[in-house]
Length: 344
Image (spheres, rainbow, N blue to C red):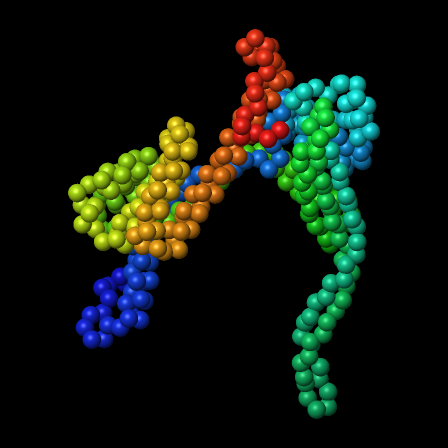
C-alpha cells in the first residue's frame, strides 16, 4: 500500500478526504508486539490446603479423580479421594477440617447412533445421452457425548460454592476408543480449569515520524515495555508535544496506554496505579480522536484489570485459608480476618 499525500486541488472531495482518513490511519501502523495477561483459575481449588475429591466409584470417574488429585498434590496441600457415600459421615464426625473444600465429580456417558449423509455427483447415461445428478447416501455413526460435572462445597459446612461442567463429543470410532479419547479430553479441561494461566496478547502499536516514538516502539518490540514506556512519557512531556496535531497525539497516547498496561515493573509495584495510568492515556486519546481502536483498547484495559483483581483475590484467599489451617503460625495463634476481596 502506498502512503502518498491525499489529492489536492478541485478534485479533492469530502468523500476522498474521508477515504484518506481511513487509509492514512492504516499507514501509521507500527510493530505488532506481545504482552502478557494473567487469568484467574476458573475453579480455584489451589486456594485450599485440603481438598477432598469424591466420586461414585465408576472406573472412569475414579480415573478422572485420580488425575485431578495428582495434579493438585503438593508438599503443603492434602488431597484425598473418597467415595461419594463417605462424605456426610465424615463431615458429621468432624473429619473434614476447616479451610477444606470438597469436589464432587460426576461423569455421564451418553452413547448414541446418529444418521449422517453425503451428497455426491453421479453421471447416468441412456439412449438420449448422459446427465449428471446428485445422489444422497445415508449412514449410521456411533457417537459418545461425555459430560463431567464438578460441584465444589465448603468442607465443614457442605455449603455449595461452585458448579461447572465440561463436555466433549466423540464419533466414528470403536466404543472403547471413544471412551479413552473422551476421558483424555475431559481430564485436560478439568486440570486447566484449576490453574491460573498467562496468555500472550498481540498488540498493534501505531508509529509516527518522530524518532523518539520510533525508538520507544523499538524498545517495546524487543520486549522492553518499561524502557518504551519511559521514552513515551518523556516525549509526551517534551516541548515537541504541543506542536503535534491531535490525531498524532492520540496515536502516541494509545502507544503509551499499551506500554503502561503491559509494563511488568508497574504491575508488580502497584497494579491499581498501573491500570489507572493506562486508562488516563487512552481516555485522552479518545477525546483527541474518537476512533474505535482507542475505545476498544480502553475496554480491554478495564477487562484486564478485572481479571487481575480476581487473580489477586485468589492469592489472598489462599493466604487466608492456609493461615486458618495452621493458626499456630499466626501471632498469638489467632486466625486473621477474611480478606475483603475474598467471598468465602
